[in-house]
Length: 166
Image (cartoon, rainbow, N blue to C red; front, side, top):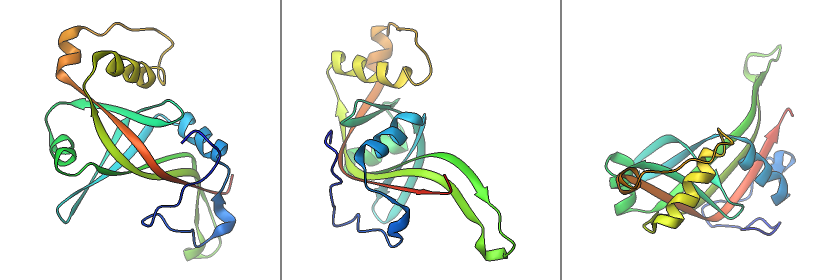
């Protein structure tokens, strides 16, 4: 999704408060590039599962890594549908009225498909993107670590942006 359009998805409908919607894809991408933590939501049968992960973004897809075993990996093997949320500029806008407090934020929320990366070169490229969020150092990845690490690419089907108070 490298163009500046917002793709509609039947499960990702129009926002109720259009004055808070971000319609510029470049602004949404800037939110994605600015944060370090992403929350992913998965579905296991009728039970939701939400987990925070560190991630990388190449302008088209998102990447995260994991141990090769565990709850999120088992769920993704059964159902690779994924929802992600990335948010920055957090705060609270205080009001004199109890129910009028607002969350200050810029947020990107998207839907996509999670795919396991098998090829070592693609794994290394994805891990480099993730590490680049924390360090300028170019790391080497021992082959034993690469074999024990699951790297997952999220192909984005749709993404929306929302902001308030910034």
